[in-house]
Amino acid sequence: MTAADRIIVPLDVSSGEEAIALLDRLPDVGFWKVGLELFVSTGPSILEELKQRQKRIFLDLKFHDIPNTMAGACRGAGRYGVDLLTVHGAAGRTALQRALEASREGAQSAGLSPPNLLAITLLTSLNSRDLAFDLKVPVELPEYALQMALLAQESGIPGAVCSPQEAAGLRRVCGDEFLLVCPGVRPTWAEGGDQRRVMTPQEALKAGASYLVIGRPITAADDPQGAWNRINDELVG
Ligand SMILES: O=C(O)c1cc(=O)[nH]c(=O)n1[C@@H]1O[C@H](COP(=O)(O)O)[C@@H](O)[C@H]1O
Image (cartoon, rainbow, N blue to C red):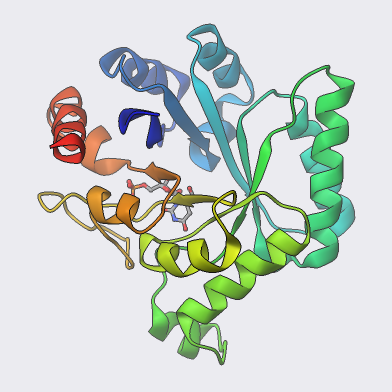
């Protein structure tokens, strides 16, 4: 797999037209993420567009609900034929197990491969202070992220979303096969925005990330293709 194959770019726009404009501007991107903003606007039609272009798809709907509702949503999403699908680890063991089973049933009923489920450990927009003082979680942040990843792994879920800052620790404990998808990635020349736990693309891959999610440094750049090239050059160089 080349470095470019390990970068997922989010289509964080609010309409199908804007999404298609971005797809046209970045023809070399092979793996796209559809998140809440776009999916609420377009529904599954954007997934068909991506499939027609033979792109890989990360459907990032971050389900977080009771087990029965998680199962229903994952059964439906399993029928879309996407590569990756997110749920929140904090939904708990039963919800994660039911989500996994249902995503497989949904895929099977449509004659498709099931998505790889990923559990969100702790959003990269939160820092230790938020965890301790606002969420009142009385464990250190790296330990919390690790426990969420282990809960997912014990539930049969094949991967997690974590910040690159926790990637090395999770890789060590969860093993080589566990998928680690890392947002919160910022080249030295890009702005952090609302991300709190960041690393550069090189550092994130070195720490053990399987995939990097890099959005605004590319999509909000004056020249998105130039930013994509620069990130790839820095990764191979
Ligand atoms: O699940 C995600 O992809 C996700 C989890 C997380 O903890 N943090 C996070 O930023 N994301 C997503 O990753 C993308 C990051 O975008 P940029 O901050 O623009 O690079 C956004 O689409 C977020 O929704």
